[in-house]
Image (cartoon, rainbow, N blue to C red; front, side, top):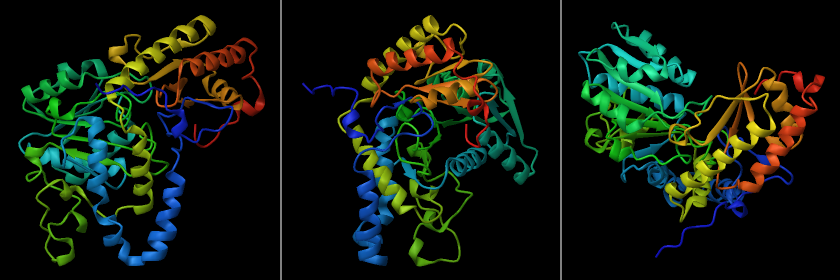
Length: 399
């Protein structure tokens, strides 16, 4: 019998002393070995091998190799995920390819809980195509009822970045397919946080970032998934040279690669991708079902303790764990200042306008003792109005 790994695995992270880090839903902490790997790539590989590193150190194959490592965590089959570029670029790629699969339809359906950048990319694509496309945005709870035979693509983020509300991926994908629409999922707040099964869902496309729960570091590359049967069909409208069937033939005419490689665009960020590849080692021997079970228990504990200790805060995340990702959000009129006061005292969460205090619960390095300690500090901040100081009200560029 395979032994279930003990959680958390704090020994695998370089966490600052005296800090309870509840912001892994925004930027994951530094796994041990990542800094040394970055130095190795810079000095030994780039410095020592120069251009030879593309072959000698396998730089060119990284996007697919790391894609397969990540794919295990999101239920993707081997060869269906590739890394590179930013999440916004991957959203554009997936959405453009999805629209091309339904040339007789003109509606992109999304919801008001989607991350704004996804909606911005959809708006830009609508303007670019100038072919009568429409972006229709409805309330999250109204998505299922809004899927009809006019919809070409349903584009949703599985876990709401503000509240942690979680869509039912399987049910909504079935609804989209039942109406003849293509399904695109954004897994920015899902990958590494909840148990995703892309293959079982049957969705055509999925995208996501790697700097949150996957701990790839600021600016870590994004990923895109294409269902295997569509990899030779999906049109890569951002037809970069590394998505070409034979990049080093330098053919003046674009021919897409016959597989997931067609969704590569430009030169991969080798140093950043090497950091991500090393960071993913913290998942060795860990199953997402175990992460999910620990997350649910910790989130439930956090909610119960905060509501008992800080009645001023209003829970806006779903109370039902099945409808929630791996974060808990509370609304508070002075939420920004309260969060700054918490950060000053070593409890790091973050804030989203207009009044949302977000707390990411990441079982890889958070345990029940951390939750208890964090809530005790929150209670002190709220009870004694420690947030009501000038330095905590001063707005910073990143919240």
